[in-house]
Image 1 (tube, rainbow, N blue to C red):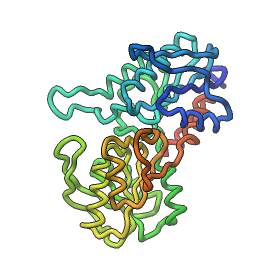
Image 2: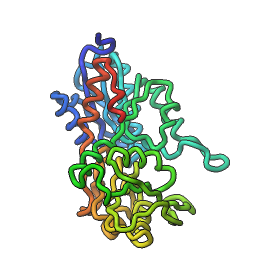
Image 3: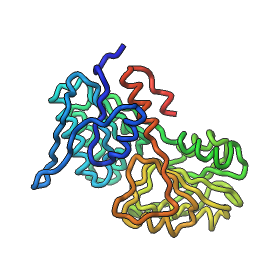
Length: 320
């Protein structure tokens, strides 16, 4: 029984229209007709050119750079759909910006992730569909259902085809202690052992590698992370396992390629042979091409999740 919405309608803002088009291609339908632009003073302007009354509306909009512009687009699109009497509104946020501000690290810090969750709920979203939240507990910041998809299985398929499953010469490496659980689950699926890079972060976007937990000597190592921002941590970890640990070669993968500031240059100059990213965030339009960066699409996973949400059936196996 379809409890909400008489049909699926997928719309997109300006953050990642290519991903929205790929999702719609998987669903065998076209992207909803709408324009997202700015007034002369910079305010966001939304125009929806087709009826959404009673429909199950999905708005695909990662809140990546420019974060605040893309967030406002999402909020105003949600409001427009709610006022147009959409049957149900799902905010499809492949990359959830502000996720790293999920706690008070020092006195008088904001918890911006909670604020953004409140804004999305207040705008009128009925549920949220996202992928690989930086901190899983952010799901609890929302008062509406949140489906947090996992992108790791897409990497597993790639590396199994590349190295085989249970290859003793391959080792998964967590770039920090905080990513240990994610790396352990990834290593179990690949059938390999894992190691951990123990580091101490002195200040934002800078880290100092301290030591490596595990023997990576002579191994082909796969660094797994959820976000690559300035790439300092990732490239530092790769250098440590290569130079200090004696690894044979280093590959890396991450769900979200933010790729800010010096990231592209650092990756190009690093010892990483290949950095595999998902297309939750588009490659920076103003950045030079990087021969080491490759993309896998998450469109199929999001399309299947949208289909199951519409049909009111379980999507729990998509979390694995």
